[in-house]
Length: 537
Image (tube, rainbow, N blue to C red; front, side, top):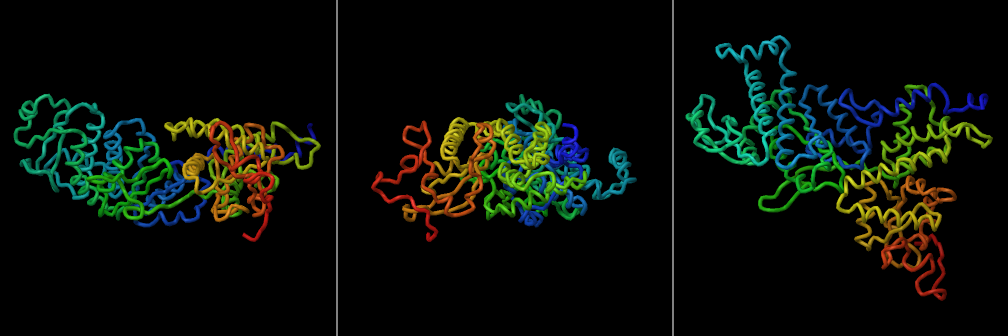
């Protein structure tokens, strides 16, 4: 195999370097942004001074867009605060909110300190300790932010069942009501008796309550600090990444408080999440959360496969940018069919696309070069094998993101897989008036098991009934070794995707997959009108 191995496009040192670069490119990092960043279509809207939800599937580029914005805002010396909700996902409410506000206040202080010259910054602490030494307003603001951050850290680590006592006083220690210009200082986390706390702080009003009550009382104070910081920094953005990692009942509570906290301060929220795993608003008295279209706009990053050529161009831009560093030409490395299959197998999702590109190169190296034409390059079979290997991780994500419905959705994936295997078609149709099934298929789309190809299609002899055309994830077909002879791309011609045999429904016994009647016989048996694939509808 020596001579043929040397001629293999996938066996060069340059491709070895590409594999390393692909490993590093699948995650956006806080250090300089993603190296392979390509602006997604419509992503520029998120640069506006407005609150935004950036919605997309896992790996669709939400964090990459947010990191790009963070780098842009930081380069303009504006405040850029990052809150990663995945870190706080296991915390109960209100600790998850305390942690988010703590990160915001800390980030505001860091942005402010960047405006202070280095020499005064070093002497700031000493000058604040020596109360007779004068400090500038910006230095005093930095200290107030530090005090607030310290109080929030103390609150964060207090057990949930503890009462909290705090004092309320003005700048000279006079007892006042809660409002602008006052300081709140936690004096007890045990709160055994209010009298005990008053012994040590008798000159201030002592208030007792829960963590959530403390946050509500302190809201005005925090807003004052954020507003003052925004005036010094020219405003800024607060990036809330992976909101969907929080419990859904908690999401609107966190969003509502953060929205009230930054409202009219010159600071804007940029929130990354998965649409079907996110509850942004909870009506009630009072309502909680943020309303899309009113409090915030949305930026969708779910490119999908509906515009296949545009999606392929976008993903290949990313791959080409990465491969250029190692001087690899992806059009020489991958066959044309393999490049198309990569897009299909990834469902248009950038991170899956890069993982599959790497995996398919590895599969090609494992098989080596044979007598088969094109075997010196990465071929479709390599992509299929790589796709099959990522199937278990997708089921792990499903169980994590949809724990309450995991069993139902996993069963549905198996049913669709069997349906597609029986018809040798990777695509299938679902009637839009089957609301429950359509909702479940939508969830599978956001979990990357199904991919929408065409909306509102018609089928002969079905009158005005409308159908969506879906592609089953290639990973599932590969894991079941069902890709041989499977039709993946003929849906691009309308007459091929309007076949009644491809209509998927959940049968009455809910055990086996089926179409509207049988494996393709039209309703009414053999005397009914035959299936004709016309183009006039």
